[in-house]
Image 1 (cartoon, rainbow, N blue to C red):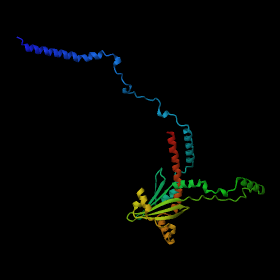
Image 2: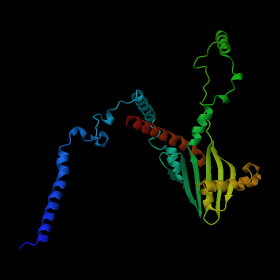
Image 3: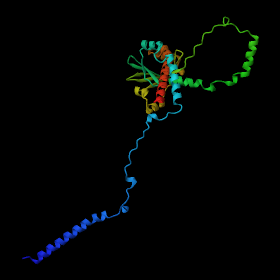
Length: 302
């Protein structure tokens, strides 16, 4: 016997299940029936662009119009300088000084400054000079303001004087001409920064010039510590500038000047050093110039 309320519950569950199935399946059938023109188009901005590769190599880019001409000129300058051979081997006089003196040479390629260092008892003696002094001399010689043009005669006056001299005088033969020895060029001044250090007593700093085989002392400074005398910092330089440096060397008593010069001479600050420094500056400047030419040529060629 079937109970009425059980039949009624079964009928309600069947109706609910049938309705749920038809409702859940409806969206798929509706979606399939939507025309394609109503669908939202895909944005081009959302697409992942394909990577583009250039078929042109970087090395095949055309070079400048002056590159080849500049490269050839640099090579020509290198050939001219290397034919002299002055930079390849250290000259004998420089080698002799380094072998006979007790100074050790510290010379780094590409740097302007050169250092000579030696021991003297419990002291350390340093001499620093730079090839920049040679470049400074060249710039001064090229300055037209050094020459007084007002004292020079005009070109017309020179030509007229030459004609008068040719008409009244007979040109002497080679046998009659006196022989003159070529005057040697005066040595340019090379600045020396000399430091004599004692680990427990500070340091003496001497500013001097090497020229014509002489050491010309300009100033003698005392520093209470080696660090203050040798430190290459802005703070140390500022402190050195603020300290009392003493009177100019030329204002000292003559006997005191002589004794200080003898004091330096005993430590190797002498005529041999004064001759070595300008010659080594010439040698190093030539060597650095050839190296500079080669570096620039390699850069242009790359």
